[in-house]
Picture 1 (cartoon, rainbow, N blue to C red):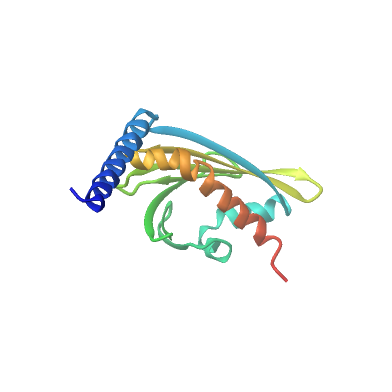
Picture 2: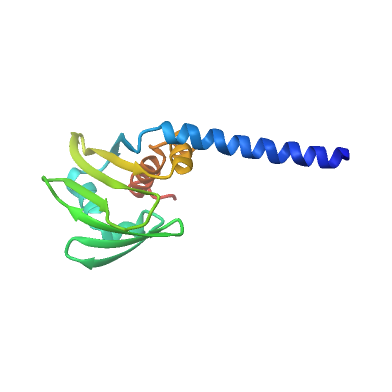
Length: 166
Protein backbone atom coordinates (compact mmCIF):
# COMPACT_ATOMS: atom_id res chain seq x y z
CA UNK A 1 0.00 0.00 0.00
CA UNK A 2 1.44 3.36 -1.01
CA UNK A 3 1.75 6.30 1.35
CA UNK A 4 -0.91 8.21 -0.58
CA UNK A 5 -3.39 5.35 -0.25
CA UNK A 6 -2.64 5.04 3.49
CA UNK A 7 -3.32 8.75 3.98
CA UNK A 8 -6.53 8.39 2.00
CA UNK A 9 -7.67 5.49 4.21
CA UNK A 10 -6.78 7.50 7.33
CA UNK A 11 -8.70 10.54 6.03
CA UNK A 12 -11.79 8.45 5.28
CA UNK A 13 -11.56 6.79 8.71
CA UNK A 14 -11.24 10.12 10.51
CA UNK A 15 -14.21 11.51 8.55
CA UNK A 16 -16.39 8.49 9.37
CA UNK A 17 -15.35 8.60 13.03
CA UNK A 18 -16.14 12.34 13.23
CA UNK A 19 -19.56 11.71 11.68
CA UNK A 20 -20.29 8.96 14.19
CA UNK A 21 -19.22 11.18 17.09
CA UNK A 22 -21.42 14.06 15.83
CA UNK A 23 -24.39 11.72 15.43
CA UNK A 24 -23.92 10.14 18.89
CA UNK A 25 -23.58 13.52 20.64
CA UNK A 26 -26.51 14.97 18.67
CA UNK A 27 -28.72 11.97 19.41
CA UNK A 28 -28.10 12.44 23.14
CA UNK A 29 -29.24 16.07 23.05
CA UNK A 30 -32.92 16.79 23.71
CA UNK A 31 -35.11 17.29 20.64
CA UNK A 32 -36.76 20.32 22.27
CA UNK A 33 -35.03 23.48 23.42
CA UNK A 34 -35.92 26.96 24.60
CA UNK A 35 -33.86 30.05 23.84
CA UNK A 36 -34.70 33.56 24.98
CA UNK A 37 -33.12 36.92 24.19
CA UNK A 38 -34.25 40.46 24.94
CA UNK A 39 -33.11 43.75 23.50
CA UNK A 40 -33.94 47.35 24.32
CA UNK A 41 -34.84 49.19 21.13
CA UNK A 42 -34.97 52.98 20.82
CA UNK A 43 -38.58 53.61 19.87
CA UNK A 44 -41.98 54.00 21.43
CA UNK A 45 -43.62 50.68 22.20
CA UNK A 46 -46.50 51.32 19.77
CA UNK A 47 -44.09 52.04 16.91
CA UNK A 48 -41.83 49.08 17.66
CA UNK A 49 -44.79 46.75 18.08
CA UNK A 50 -46.34 47.87 14.79
CA UNK A 51 -43.09 47.02 13.02
CA UNK A 52 -43.07 43.53 14.55
CA UNK A 53 -46.76 42.77 14.16
CA UNK A 54 -47.09 43.84 10.51
CA UNK A 55 -45.38 40.85 8.91
CA UNK A 56 -45.86 42.20 5.40
CA UNK A 57 -43.41 44.96 6.41
CA UNK A 58 -40.70 42.57 7.60
CA UNK A 59 -38.84 42.74 4.26
CA UNK A 60 -38.23 46.44 5.01
CA UNK A 61 -35.98 45.52 7.94
CA UNK A 62 -35.09 41.84 7.50
CA UNK A 63 -33.77 39.80 4.60
CA UNK A 64 -37.05 37.91 4.09
CA UNK A 65 -40.00 37.72 1.75
CA UNK A 66 -43.46 37.45 3.31
CA UNK A 67 -46.74 36.46 1.67
CA UNK A 68 -49.98 36.42 3.61
CA UNK A 69 -51.89 33.26 2.75
CA UNK A 70 -54.77 33.65 5.16
CA UNK A 71 -55.99 35.63 8.13
CA UNK A 72 -53.58 33.89 10.48
CA UNK A 73 -51.05 32.33 8.10
CA UNK A 74 -47.99 33.56 6.21
CA UNK A 75 -45.34 32.12 3.95
CA UNK A 76 -41.82 33.36 4.73
CA UNK A 77 -38.83 32.87 2.43
CA UNK A 78 -35.48 33.29 4.14
CA UNK A 79 -31.99 31.91 3.58
CA UNK A 80 -33.16 29.64 0.77
CA UNK A 81 -36.04 28.09 2.72
CA UNK A 82 -39.76 28.62 2.54
CA UNK A 83 -41.67 28.15 5.77
CA UNK A 84 -45.37 28.31 6.52
CA UNK A 85 -46.35 29.92 9.81
CA UNK A 86 -49.58 30.07 11.75
CA UNK A 87 -49.93 33.33 13.68
CA UNK A 88 -51.33 33.51 17.18
CA UNK A 89 -51.93 36.58 19.32
CA UNK A 90 -52.53 35.22 22.84
CA UNK A 91 -52.09 38.58 24.63
CA UNK A 92 -51.56 42.25 23.82
CA UNK A 93 -48.16 42.93 22.23
CA UNK A 94 -47.55 39.19 21.93
CA UNK A 95 -47.18 37.43 18.59
CA UNK A 96 -46.50 33.71 18.20
CA UNK A 97 -45.20 32.52 14.83
CA UNK A 98 -45.56 28.71 14.75
CA UNK A 99 -44.01 26.64 11.97
CA UNK A 100 -46.66 24.49 10.30
CA UNK A 101 -44.55 23.35 7.34
CA UNK A 102 -44.16 19.59 7.18
CA UNK A 103 -41.16 17.34 6.54
CA UNK A 104 -38.56 19.71 7.99
CA UNK A 105 -35.60 18.73 10.20
CA UNK A 106 -36.86 21.31 12.73
CA UNK A 107 -40.05 22.91 14.03
CA UNK A 108 -41.40 25.05 16.80
CA UNK A 109 -42.37 28.64 17.42
CA UNK A 110 -41.13 32.13 18.19
CA UNK A 111 -42.98 34.28 20.67
CA UNK A 112 -42.39 37.99 20.19
CA UNK A 113 -43.21 40.34 23.07
CA UNK A 114 -42.81 44.09 23.44
CA UNK A 115 -43.01 46.16 26.60
CA UNK A 116 -42.41 49.83 27.18
CA UNK A 117 -39.10 50.56 28.90
CA UNK A 118 -39.62 54.29 29.53
CA UNK A 119 -37.83 57.22 27.90
CA UNK A 120 -39.10 56.23 24.45
CA UNK A 121 -37.56 52.75 24.54
CA UNK A 122 -39.06 49.29 24.18
CA UNK A 123 -37.86 45.92 25.45
CA UNK A 124 -38.39 43.27 22.77
CA UNK A 125 -38.15 39.64 23.84
CA UNK A 126 -38.13 36.63 21.52
CA UNK A 127 -38.62 33.15 22.93
CA UNK A 128 -37.83 30.23 20.65
CA UNK A 129 -39.49 26.95 21.59
CA UNK A 130 -37.72 24.82 19.05
CA UNK A 131 -37.55 21.20 18.04
CA UNK A 132 -34.65 19.74 16.10
CA UNK A 133 -35.34 16.22 14.88
CA UNK A 134 -32.17 15.23 13.03
CA UNK A 135 -29.22 14.37 15.36
CA UNK A 136 -26.63 15.97 13.04
CA UNK A 137 -28.66 19.19 12.75
CA UNK A 138 -29.27 19.09 16.53
CA UNK A 139 -25.50 18.95 17.15
CA UNK A 140 -24.81 21.91 14.85
CA UNK A 141 -27.80 23.86 16.15
CA UNK A 142 -26.56 23.53 19.72
CA UNK A 143 -22.77 23.73 19.40
CA UNK A 144 -22.02 25.57 16.15
CA UNK A 145 -24.85 27.99 15.33
CA UNK A 146 -26.32 28.28 18.83
CA UNK A 147 -30.03 28.26 19.53
CA UNK A 148 -29.93 32.04 19.94
CA UNK A 149 -28.25 32.79 16.60
CA UNK A 150 -31.41 33.44 14.57
CA UNK A 151 -32.98 35.38 17.43
CA UNK A 152 -29.91 37.59 17.69
CA UNK A 153 -29.99 38.32 13.95
CA UNK A 154 -33.69 39.25 14.09
CA UNK A 155 -33.15 41.57 17.07
CA UNK A 156 -30.10 43.13 15.39
CA UNK A 157 -32.16 43.81 12.26
CA UNK A 158 -35.07 45.25 14.25
CA UNK A 159 -32.78 47.51 16.27
CA UNK A 160 -30.93 48.66 13.13
CA UNK A 161 -34.23 49.55 11.47
CA UNK A 162 -34.64 52.31 14.05
CA UNK A 163 -31.13 53.62 13.32
CA UNK A 164 -30.81 53.76 9.53
CA UNK A 165 -27.28 54.06 8.16
CA UNK A 166 -26.36 57.58 7.02
